[in-house]
Structure formats: structure tokens, C-alpha cells
Length: 523
Image 1 (cartoon, rainbow, N blue to C red):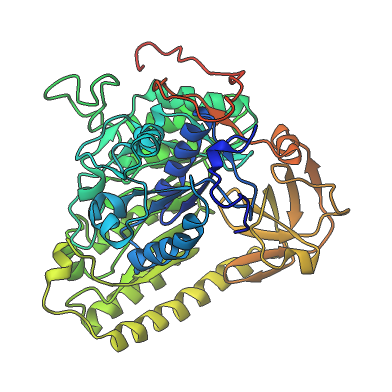
Image 2: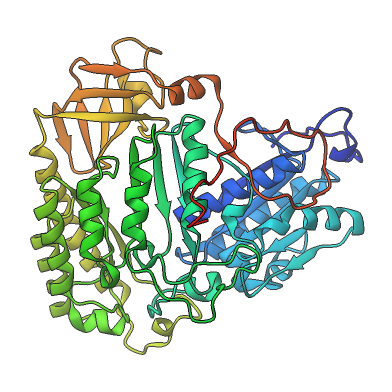
């Protein structure tokens, strides 16, 4: 971070310059999407996104409480910023997200130079808290125990011109013993279908081709539709709409111009046949299912409070492959959960062998304070967990390679992506995602002729466990509005509710397009 301000000069006092911001995201897709909301709020208040590598007047950390060493990563980064902030009067630091929701005032005890601490339930308060901290010259800590404003009611500044996340629910009603998310994000609250479809429509009107529907448990969608005014159920005992998620997928498929719909993550206990039918019968819905397994042992699944068993899980996969023979199925697996025996682990390997996942996110169990599993006495030695983890990775890599090798010689349609290939500069390749989510590295015919957001068709020439190679000539190339926007460096913005926030720096121009909800029955 360079010395951008003269000593003693406040960033707010620099002539004609709007205050700049940077949001640093730690954790899951939900956090990444929340960061887009934070960016939208800040830009609505007059902040401007700092250029990559440039110093920022405001640094916001959107934190995670699930990943291992999340707190060490945060406090290490805060420690690095302390001397920088001391030498730049007027600079501000804010900490939000799950770790802030959990630690609350502990954040200031560890890092008293932080200006604002806010939680998962009051993202919309960020600009006001920053202004209050600046005005009062005192740190502001505001943590709510229940949702104040549905995050998707807030404005957002999107990271991508061609792909977008759309939240359909927040919170979770499950009680998995290893997971702290329900205590930090609360009980599940679902958005009205009309609101979701209006947001998707607004994104498509700005060129987005690929939308991922987000929720902690997307296929429980319909359990509790929120009244937008109160964020509580409009009926004390509302009937659950068990077909709501399948119908939402079909409704997304009817939006003209939307080419790909994905969703993450479903819970096996809630997965129903109507969702499989909607996936198979809606061309826009991608042939990809990410469904966490966590363990292949019924005994461990019970200890985890996962309300399904291995046969139920494998039965869902059989049904999906019957309806969509070429669907890619991916998963999450935890190794070394307390009490896991060698026999339990072998049952997990057996399910992996039978399921033949396209890929798997594999994790070594580590205790999370505040979860029941952290208090279990039969914790597994680190050396045993590491050995099992290594064996699982070897098995899954073999299966992934065999699956990918079967695709060599076939043709795939790719949505060209930005930054998905670490070696692309050296290999003169670009990268894209197939409809089933697989990563493919390909060679454009001429440098600069293909942009992120364009669509190409290529033939697969080689395979590795985690990606495919297409080194032959492109078979098709379709330039898109998303590619045009990428070339211009533009990303979509979606409008939220007005929050009465005082502007800082230069106000942003109003958005031109905003979709309206025409489905009065579901708004």
C-alpha cells in the first residue's frame, strides 16, 4: 500500500476525490454474494472501488467462521493494516460477516484500530455505521440477532459481467453438529418468487447469461416466505410449499436471454423427484448437481445429525442419472469426524467409488467452537485424519480422471471465464466452464478475439483430474453482450431499497434498467 496521502491529511479532505473502498472476502459463495451487496451499498453512498493494488480509504473484511484458521487470517490481516492506518488519518477499517457475528466485541479487543464491526443480519447498516464512526471518532459495534433487511433487498455491484449469484433464502433450519452457520445466520427465511425472478430479469437485461441460485439449503425453499416489510412470516403458521423450488427452476427457464441456471447447495434429506424432473425438462437448468455427502457411514451421519442415510443418498444419484445420464455430480466430504473408525471411513470410500463423483471438495474435520461436535470426546488424531484424507484424495482423483478421459474427442459449449487458468498467460490459453460446470482450458485463434462472457464450442483433446484441455481450433464462437461488457470493464448493478444514507464523495449515476415484477400472485 503506497503513501497516497500527505502526513496529517485526511483522505476525506483530498480535493475532488471520492473515497475509495476495497472489500476482502473470506469464505463461501454466500459471503462472496454478500460482498457484492456491501459494494453496492458503498457505491450508493458515493464510494468508488479502489483500483487493484491501489490503497483504499476504506477496507471491509467480510469474514468466515467455518474455515479453519479463519480468525488467524483475519487478525493477521488487521495487524498488517494497523501501521498503514496510523500513517493515513481518515482511513477506516470495517469487519463484518460470520466471524464478526460470533466474536462481536472481541474484534475490538484484538484490533482496537477497527472502526466498525457489523454482523450477518445488518449488512445494510454499513454506510451509516461508517459515517457514525467518522463523526463520533469512536468505533461502532452493531450486531443483531435476527435479520433486519433481506440482503437481496440491498443494492449490489456485481463482480462478473456474465455470471451472477441470486439469493433465494438466508439461514438454515438444520442442526448439523459440525456447523456453526445456523447460529450465525439464523433460521431459514425465503424470498418471494416474484422478487427472485425480477432480480434475475434485471441481471439478464444487463447481459448476464449464467445465474446461480443460492441458499444454505435451496431445496427446502418454500418453508417460510418472508413478508418484505417485517421479515417475518405473514401468517403465523404458513403452509409449506414443497413444490416451490422445482417451480422456481422452471420459471427461471422461461426468462428469455438467460442461458444457464445453477443452484447450490441442496440437502439430500429434502431432495425431491419434482426437482429432478425440473432439471431434466428445463433446458436452461445446467446438468450439474452439487449435493454434500459429508460421510458414507450411517453411524457418522447420525452423529453429524444429517437426516439421511447412505442408501437414500445413492438413490438420489441413481434417479438423477436416470433422468440426465451425462449430469456431473459433485459433493462435499468431511474426513476424521469425531468417533470415525476405519470401518466408517471405508464406508465413505465405498460410496465415493459407487457414486463416481465428477469432483469432490474434501475437508479434514477441525473443531469449531460453539458446535456440539467440538465438545465430543472421541476426537481423531491429526495423523490419522491426514492419512485418511490422503487416501480419499487419491481415490477421487482417479475417478475424476477416468470421468474426464471419457470426454476426450467430444464437443462442449463453454462460457468463457476470466481468471480461471493460472497458467493461461504462459500457455496462450483461455478458460471456460462447460454447462456441467467442468473447467476447460482452450486456445483462442487470435489473442484478444475471445472475451470473458463469450460462448465457444471446442473439442476436448486431453484430460486431467481437475480440468479438460481443448488445444484444437475453436468450432464456434459467439460474441455476446456479456463479452462486450467485459471488454469495457463493466459489471451489472442491481438496485435495492433506499436506506437514507448520507452520500460520501461523488454520487453515482442512477441505474438505467430495473426489472419489475409482473407476477402479482407471487410478489
